Length: 229
Image (cartoon, rainbow, N blue to C red; front, side):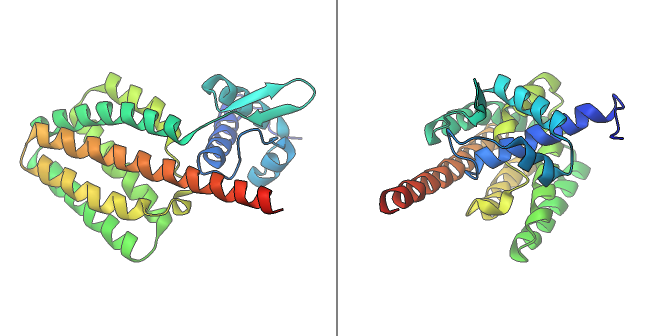
């Protein structure tokens, strides 16, 4: 029998929601496309029940729609929508970086430098999964140093629009992480709050442009395929 424990079900729901969310964000599921719960369940090796509950959560976030007699479909999501989200993210992440610049210790600076160098090495070696983890650790540490939990929480909500599982599908994203992080780190090392704010904000806007551009290219390719099919 499947595990019915209350501890595991929310985790499975979250896993399903995260998986579908990132399929949408990376263009692997297109607006209006029907979402097959059995396929998602098979991909994740779970039952369709947590998949449905995950999709209901995504409906509340505006990622999917529930259509009568059809089921769940992907909601409209334009490149400009993505850029709007990242513009808001830039303000929050910039504020956290500015606060971190005023609080960061020499030991924390050294740890960020170590993370950055390891990330650069991972990018050069094409280790995308490693880059994902290091990118997360770099941002998490800055947000932790800032010691502004409510701002960090708001940032995490918008972070749902930042794909992680399918990192390699976004051209230029790993390189942007390495290059933009270097600018952020330089400002933090100098304890320059405003430079840190600006560097982090530009990093977030850059990421938004990359993701929006990725979606635009996928939509154009899909339109071309339909017109020539």
